[in-house]
Image: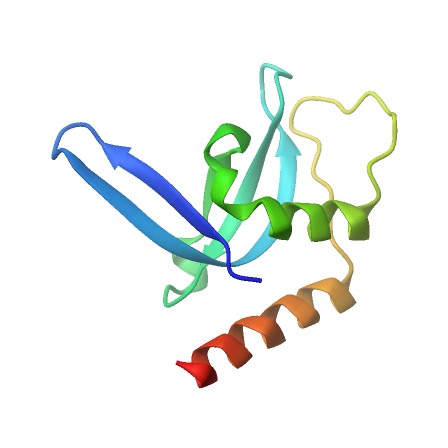
Length: 105
């Protein structure tokens, strides 16, 4: 399942498209208005991971559905800054999927 993240740099008038390798973890936004996701992008090292706002993840719907199915989305009041962790199995499946896509290119 390929997922993309798109952002617009208003200073340079460019759109950036990056393929998501994996969601490392989500956390509740500081203002408690939703989630932001720590993302590792294909072709970038761990030091380049960054948080992406949930409103900017529209190109990653299947990945998000898979992720939340693994985590389990409970009707719970999550606190700002609270971090949820996916299972190791989910992370391994996601990395294997990225490897398969790269081999097929």
